[in-house]
Image (cartoon, rainbow, N blue to C red; front, side, top):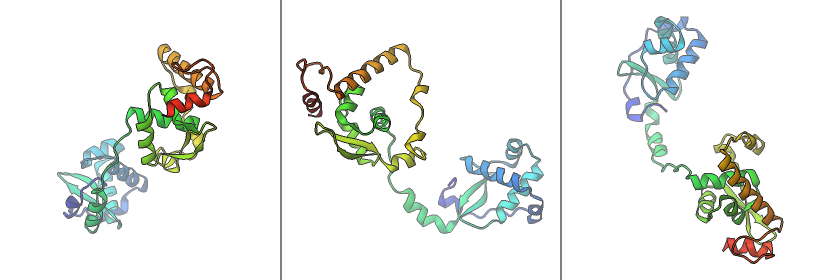
Length: 230
């Protein structure tokens, strides 16, 4: 919706309807796309330049769009053209847009979500080991927002997390196989070394290997995971 409900109420002057008969369907579709993408009204000359067409052809396309019926209409504002909602949708639009917006993910939340997406099912202690910092708050927020969910417990009793269908919808993924290939990531040598060390350490502990710093050598993985979970 490129127009507020209030602005949509004003009637636009009609373009000569006879020109709509000569409008090229493909150009009309392009003009409609340009108006949809632009946050501001667009002048005929600018539309003509962008579409590589003559101003008369743009006017024909606009006339064709103006003759359409539906929930989106063509309006002229400030010497330019824009797409707007119909006046009848004003009350419904106000109710919809009055809902609080979801804040963007923080860096910590994005990191945790990436780990869950690629390693699921994965526990919070494992996420903390990979990131190198505590992740309780970030994981809790992701769960509250419906991006990850509880999917059971590990052999040590820690909650396991996986991504949800909402995650796939928000990121436009047909399936989890559509996730970007991590091998395409091109870190600096320093970042690569740090990430490799974290992942290897997490993998060793997951397999019951060396203890975490601060725990006695040979401490069982269950003790290490429980310590981080606390």
